[in-house]
Image (cartoon, rainbow, N blue to C red):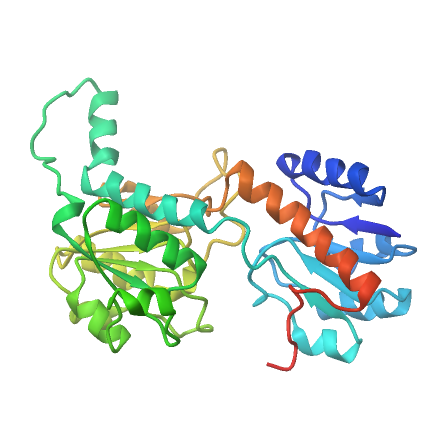
Length: 332
């Protein structure tokens, strides 16, 4: 068995190499993304592993079929950038890593919120300039707030435990109820109800598709004054322009953003020596009421290792048995 792994970062290499040695399976590591041009490197291999934020071109899967490669395993959760019809047409199976570390993302959401509540961003800037005055950056306490958790999958449930540990009141919404959360009587009957009754709204739901936002001008108008948005899920859940305006005009207190609707080509890229052309994101960065990070909520040693190894384990299962527990149903 021979596998090829595309889009591999430096921090992933050692985990892939360790897995290769432990399983006695050859894995070719490629730093380039998977494209119609680079897919040619896969000729002679049995399966492809990949990760990238950019869309996967349909031509990739036509070439895979020509090479007799019928499994692709993603090192991430989301498959919204994969043309599933092209996979079906070429009889290619797809796996993902549905859970690499829910705690990593849940912990990030709370850490970002705490930084915002205690005005760390503005305070750090002041201290850097040797301004050691307290005012006007008085903080707020999490134990006094109601946190609305939108989405009670693995990440949402991990977040609930942490928020409860801080003494916050937690309410939650999910289309399908989790028995453990239901026992605690945390669910509200709709997302609108959650938005209207939360001091903090933390998003842990998948993308709803382009143009279908959860946080926008209309939904913000129904939210509590001085509320906070935390998004470590998907950038397109929020209309960032509407969110920025709501913070700027004082309707909302602020926001924590680890994702951004136009992040592709910006996040995980060094643009320090280039003209920064995204004026909206520039405003977000400059505002002390926004905590912005470049899609790093998942970025821990545990999560990176799991992404690298679980994707390879799924590939082996697919090739040896014709299926795996992480196979995506392409008919849904």
